[in-house]
Amino acid sequence: MAVQPPDDADATPSSRRNGGVRLSLCIMMFLQFFIWGAWFELGFDYIPKLGFSDWQLQLVFGAFNVGALVALFFSAQFADRKFAAEKFLAFSHLIGGLAIMGLAFLQAPHGTQTGNYNSVLIVGQGDSDSRGVGKLANGTNVTVDGLAINWPEFREKLVQFDKEPDVAKKKDPRPMVTFVVTNRDLKLGEITGDAKASLAPFWPFFLLMLIHSLFYVPTISITNSIAFANLSDPSRQFGPVRVWGTIGWIAASWPFIFILVDWARVPAMGELGFINWIGTALGTSIQGAAALDMKRYIFLVAGIASLVLAAFSLTLPHTPPRKATGEDSLAWLKAMKLLKHPFVLVLFLVTFIDAAVHQSFFYWTFTFLGPKADGGVVDIPSNWVGPVMKIGQIAEIVTMLFLGYVLKTFGWRTTMVFGVLGHAARFALFAYAPEKELAIAINVLHGICYAFFFATVYIFVDEYFPKDVRSSAQGLFNVLILGLGPFAANFACGKLKDAYTTDKVLNYSGVFQYSMGAALLGAVILAVFFHPPKRKTS
Image (cartoon, rainbow, N blue to C red; front, side, top):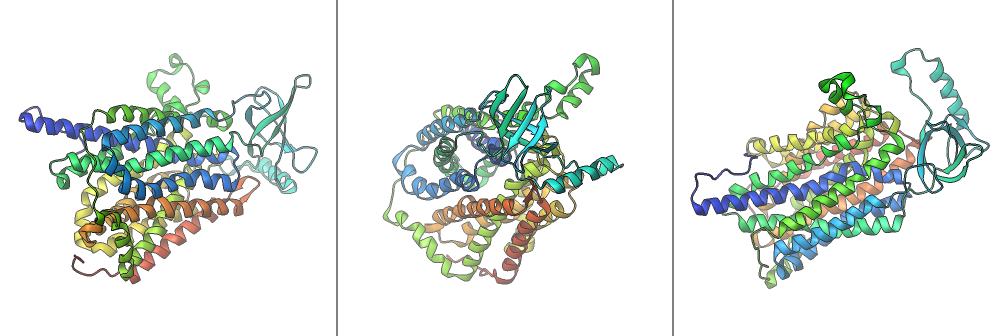
């Protein structure tokens, strides 16, 4: 599958026009998924650290899932029948881009003034069980309220830490705590903070995320519609155009390789020479409160890309509203009725399970792979965690090249089972063998899982569902993949995080077993109960 935009220098005027259209569609796809990829992975690390309560986090993360439900009915039943697609795309990205950009400016400023936020390593107990003490890098003494630490156990672990002779085995029990400054005593050089206070106002944050989601998610199907309407041979040309969306998702993490560098700790270039200097810089990431301050730029990058796409959409080929028919308005109901067939019902159920497992990967993985000082386990510098996770999308591009051969050789059921089992294998490694090299390499499975299950589901629906309900059936499965499955995962992961967190330390091995178990359950259900007919239904 080609991934370069077409070169039409020797083509006829008509083919050059077609080549120009395809180039525009490639750019459209690149920006469409760059927006999503810029904030989605890192957002699951950043947003929980703002101090929102469990129900508030579920609402924030659930906003995107609500957008998926809106996309099914609004874009399919209204938007693409009332508005030219390129104008709807421009308007949606203008509003959605401004909304997500606004999220970057809601966080409290980083500092030591009252109302600012900061972070400190807790080194001992304060004057009550809910208080801990520490010291900032500038020597300022800090008392943090709102802690839930088992102090006798803390002191015992601290003694063991000091006695451990093997540096590699040392595990510092002192937690890095983020807090909001509530009082500042200049005479004593002390500040007091609250670890339970939110770093951003919840309702404005939620509403901006909801607005962005409501306008962004429908554009995923709208960009597909624009592409299909303007390609002369969609069955052959759509793949090379759509792959630029995956490239956009991958590229979105690269700005943060530089944004999240701790430049204050990087020596002058003259001291090291350029090659050694760039290697040192890219391996030196910021941590704690400073990292949190920079991670908010995920929303700024996403917002800028959205505004660029809003402007670029006005240059796309005119795609007029499609005519509505009475049958179209009932197509999704007809698609739902197909659940009476056992093989469709089984696929629907397993898609829900796999979508939830897939979402749990994003919920946990960025923090898990990141620096230990920020609550991670694998200890990859924070500026490299995004590119490491993007290994999955690179694998997805390669896997898609061979998907047709795999389906022909192994069939629908076996291919899907392997896709679901890939999730189980990855979470098993995360839970039981979280070594850095293995944890990085296993991300290859993410792309294989996506291609072997989700992409295969879309192809299966196109193959087996009647033509008059095919589009609505794809929409229903999209609701599971982007809506109901992820929403259930966000809720379950929030509960598991509470249950498996002790002294602000999350037992990742424990929570990963649930994702692994769910994937194994889905694979067994597919293997035993999924028996599609040998021929098309219609």
